[in-house]
Amino acid sequence: MDQVTLSETLGLERLEVNLFRGTTPDKEQRHRIYGGQVIAQSLLAAYETVEDRICHSLHCYFIRPGDPKVPIVFEVDRSRDGGSFTTRRVIAVQHGQQIFNLAASFQVAEDGYEHQADQPVAPPWDEVEDDSAVRKRLAALAPDDEDWIDREQPIEMRTVGGRFDSAAPDPREPSQQVWFRARHPIGEDQHMHQVILAYASDMSLLGTAIRPHGVSWRTPGFQSASLDHAMWFHRPTDFNEWHLYVQESPSASGGRGFNLGYIYRASDGALVASCAQEGLMRMKKPKA
View 1 (cartoon, rainbow, N blue to C red):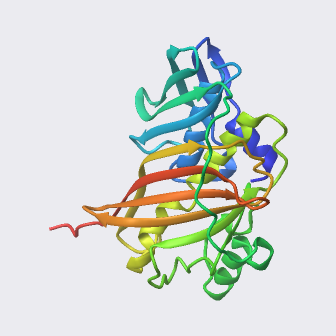
View 2: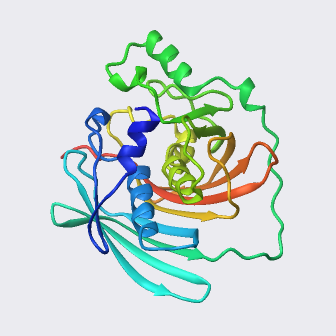
View 3: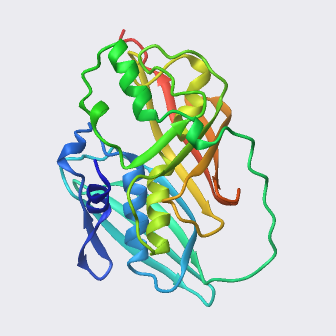
């Protein structure tokens, strides 16, 4: 889908003072709603109740798979409006049940002490092949019936070392580097850059924990899904510019994989955001 459709996807209809409704576009044709969409729309719902403050952190849980065929209702709880910080909780509901919840904290702009980890060494973005081109090439070698192969994605992504072949994944180290940015202009509103960065942050993180095990979402019997997601925004940024998403998975156990992500701005190496996520990753047990 193109950027206009992405903006429409993330756009919300206000139903009441603290109640909003969002939808998923028909052309997505997913079996369940992409998790980054619900993160982004929940953050946007929270922003609709906050003035003159910027999100510095969010923490959320995926409770049930989202149904792309019906609208999502977002209920915002105005937990606290303090002198420096504002806290909001958002519950996403479908079919009368919670599918997702988010807690976010917003802060007035402040100056303070600064330090950061250096951006790791990586090949420049213009020396890395676009993931869409890799997918098309792999699909040509092993024809796939997924119609999204030829559809323009709203986030441009370039995986260092190349995307793995989901039809025949080879074991790799539990770490990866991905260049990414919004494909079409976002505008000057900083909170929308955060919303779309949050949308993109869920796109490859879970796959980091899966890499060493020679499986993918296409492996028969394999199950994977995001369970929770946390994000910290350290510095304002323009997500229309290239960013390096550095990802690692320190642990997988108990049917879950744990992942960490660090997002650096290409122009100056600034660390603009960090992420943490745990996801389900297991093989279905055969029926007795």
